[in-house]
Image (cartoon, rainbow, N blue to C red; front, side, top):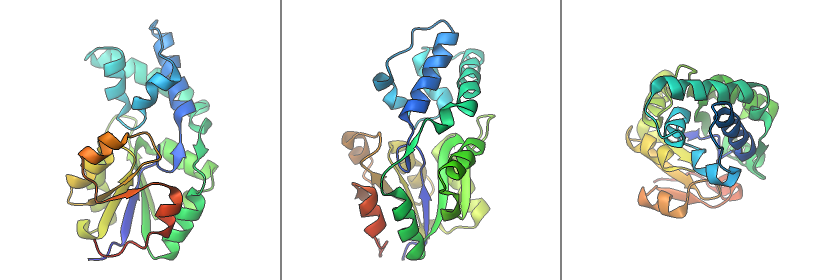
Length: 218
């Protein structure tokens, strides 16, 4: 059955958020009196739910401490960090091309929806999407299986006509859990080893490959 709907991840798929995410994590850790790793050592934090990353960074399962770190992160992110970001070259053209091919596009990000909407507006990407979906500040919908299930239900999408596309294993796993096919972009923050281990239906090595892909019968 031909695909009709694409669920697109944000961080590492449409934009490169490394600067903002790493600086906000460093800020939160410093405020808590913890030595902050170099930005390059924080790349693994791009993709997973924020609270999960702070649990690992702080070596704790204490929900109060993790919530405090997340709050400090978001204080800076809401004012500065969300715009310390850049759109990958070729993404605006890819979105236009996919729309022209008849796909309905939906954002599917673990980032809070309120921030994702601001980012899309700031970079003039919002008009490409039929719907924007992300987590809530409470932590609800931060895991991709729950988020994808929410998108399918709220938008009335048929899983067999839908593919999720992202740069980390979490995107692939979120799709698989809901009977949705999965595409992996290799230019983001997931390693080839990580992505290949999850056996996605298709790889995209550049935004240009995404733009030139007609969907087809998979």
